[in-house]
Each structure stands twice: as C-alpha cells, then as structure tokens.
Length: 60
Image 1: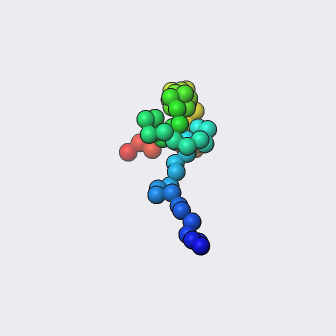
Image 2: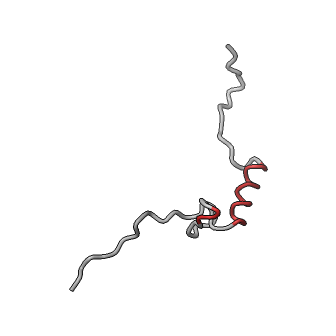
C-alpha cells in the first residue's frame, strides 16, 4: 500500500479577477476577457493608492 500523496510540482496560481486557474498565454489571468477587465479597471482609475488627506503639500 502506498501512502504517499502526490502534490502539484508548483503552486497553482489563480486569476485575480475571477479565481479560476491562470493560463500561461494570458498569465496571471485565465482568459483575455479577465485581462481586459483588469486593464479597464486601471484605465478608469479603480485601482487607487490612498494618500494623505491633510490638505498640505510637501514642497521642499
């Protein structure tokens, strides 16, 4: 009896948009559609790094 469990050689990366397994041709996405959804989010400004809201500019 063999008690060894086979594990994947590498970790399976998932699509950041829908969570399906990523495809090599469109990595890190699973499809051209998810890749385009991500690009649209970037172009619309949905991905924003919040800044300080103190109203003072740091000019030196």
